Length: 202
Picture 1 (cartoon, rainbow, N blue to C red):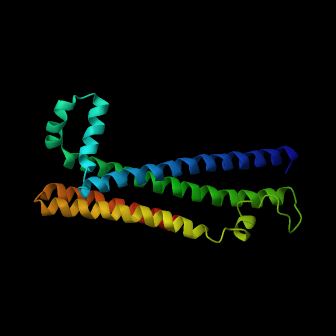
Picture 2: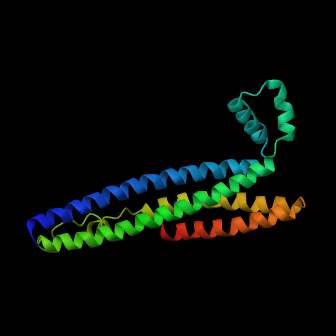
Picture 3: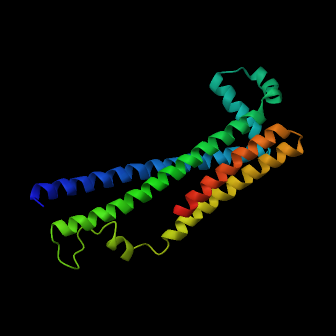
């Protein structure tokens, strides 16, 4: 292979690595956003004191609603509808989280394969560490507690997610909202499936 082709291959490797970092940052933002939404949804679902009035106050402030109407709004606010919307948002964010994580994993496998090709094309000596960052070098120097860090994040989000989904479905059926309960079950099941898939590949 010509020197020009080697440069093209190395440049392609660098751009792929940069794209991987961008996707990684977006995945982290999605995780934090999902954690925040699930946390808010859990507080509302468990009827934590002041959680629902606080939500109304935030909306009232955003819409510049007078203080005299806030008490009336607190009594008539459709909290159940908000929780259903949050459930749909949670499902959407969970799918995005899984998709971006799967994309990152695929990128790293691809980068490892490109590293092998580059080393072959430029005939690096056996034992050289150049172009092994995402393959041999990473495997040999993987952080010992790396898996535990990932497991702690997944466990934290998973517990919140199960608490929200479980209490949401239970509340619907215990209050006699059969239609809403069935709809929530149909949304909860794929949400759990995608979260499990995300946890498996993380």
